[in-house]
Length: 492
Image 1 (tube, rainbow, N blue to C red):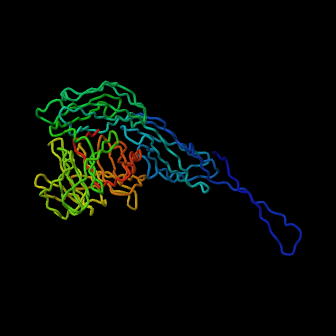
Image 2: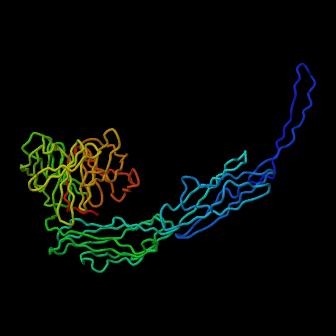
């Protein structure tokens, strides 16, 4: 907008008391002054490649008939630092019809999110009608940004003579297509890892993703039981054109077919086997442990032996094949742990499980074997949780919807700190609760209902999963209070 001059028009009207004739007005003379035009009012640098540098011109012109003070020209405090303006002495004075051209620069720098860059250039002037003019700045940094998840990929426990399939998801978080090529297993990768038949190259549009499948077959029991390797690929990612994902798997001779299920116990003591692949229960037997208390929580070890804690603090072993209950040497109420949620994590470096305990008063601990001694780890900010350990070393906690949203949280096994936290707002089931991890998903048992949450839907930058929990089964008459699964169960 350009205004060549400004006139203030008006008149002076006198009203005399008692007169009926109109009073002739006297017009006021027009006045002229400072008037600044800023062009353009928005600067778009459009698409810029990483490392590029682009400039645009901004012109301030005095279109009035009196001198104007150009007091300052600055970038807003919240500006993206990629926008800069050349240094000039301020303040400056522009006479009538005088103009000043300035250079605005956008430097894309190395590839980095966000793709969209925004800024505001603040022009402060002596123009009384428009003392401040904001010039919008914008640009897009276009690049391929390829991410791999999970990285590393740990198959966890794989039973002897069994084959497990894992997936690495490649995602394009940039703003141009990513060209992926040369998918291979690096030389030196254990031969038990294989790439099934699939494309070795493809293009990913911005925001798109594609899975890459890898299999591991536990074909021999000779040490070392920990097997490793790397998946490699090439791309046009400007930062890491050569991608690399570490692979690991542990051949476990203890793992059996019995460890490939989730076991549950309900409030009535009914011990059952749940198959996540068919979403079906198989009732095994009613628990007849020597206690009048009801079951509180449970866990299953690598030998497919269940450990059930009851409401009176007693811990029993339960044969998952028969449901037969056996007493243990466990001493109740160690370190203040009377009742607790339970979950095991597996460390492929050592081939061992760690059984974690979580009290209802928000204290995390471990239970050692064979001594059955409790050690306190630390406190955490969640109430009444159940635990799910994974075969690839993660520890998760689930708090049911009791007066608020249900919560799923990943915890640091070393100190009980919460590393990730997600609200599961659509879960409304009531009753007992338990959580276990199987085949890349969490199974949440709440009363008679089972909900599934895919681990791949969890993004630490979001408060809720990318896809909400799905109710996969309702089994009338069951009120699940404990669930257990071996770390021999698949992690993908």
